[in-house]
Amino acid sequence: MWCPEHPKLGITITLPPRELAAERVQCRRPGALHHLAFWVESRQEVDRLYAKRLAIGVDVVIPPRAFPENSQPGCYALYLRDPDGLRYEIVTY
Image (cartoon, rainbow, N blue to C red; front, side, top):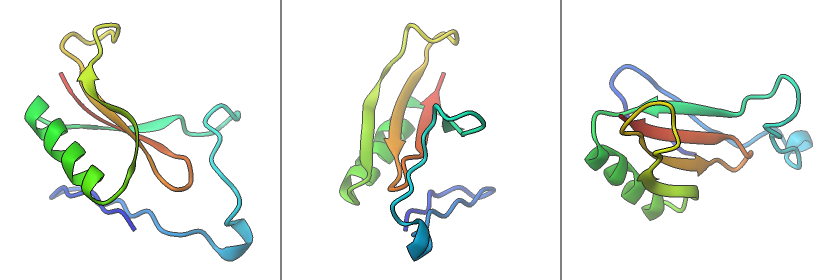
């Protein structure tokens, strides 16, 4: 189970029921969720959360880096994937 820390938000990722265990989220399926983004205050916070996720073995899709191609200037982000295939972005501008 993975529970990000935030004083005003709680998200818990749990194991699916046995009959759905083989199902994975497909972000390109119509109506599917592509990813959830969480804004943090600094690059240091992105890096801190990256280190904590590595320590517990979370699947890192893209390690922290600048994204100059993003429409928001100063974008610095990290992308993770949970066991069901959902992607999460931790981002700052």
